[in-house]
Length: 148
Image (cartoon, rainbow, N blue to C red):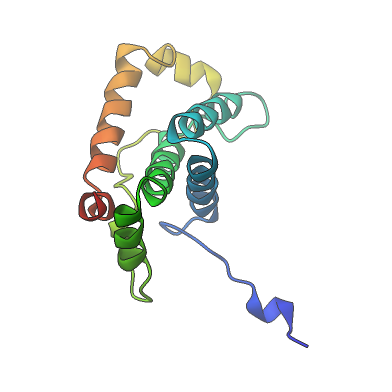
């Protein structure tokens, strides 16, 4: 009889439980559907978070979602990439920097009013600037570079 409480782990990425949830949910969506759908769902969730009671729009969450979706997509893209990914992430000493993007300077916790004031809407030039910066950070993640 194993004590299930002893087996529980507080999984965190960058010191936050919600980042682990974002990463794993997006990776799972990318594995079972595709990374574009995972990204769309993440974006819709962030827009929903701008409403009353939500945590606000967060580009940090989107960056973590995008990283998870990219890793998930790579895991099922082909056998060679999947094996490389397993080798890179399958060690006890794996470092977050392999698969987590730099989150500094990304806006978060924005209410609907603040989001509209700063970015107008999803797809606006200001929004696209931040989204493109996130994409570049994801593209350069060591785990993705090594497993490509």
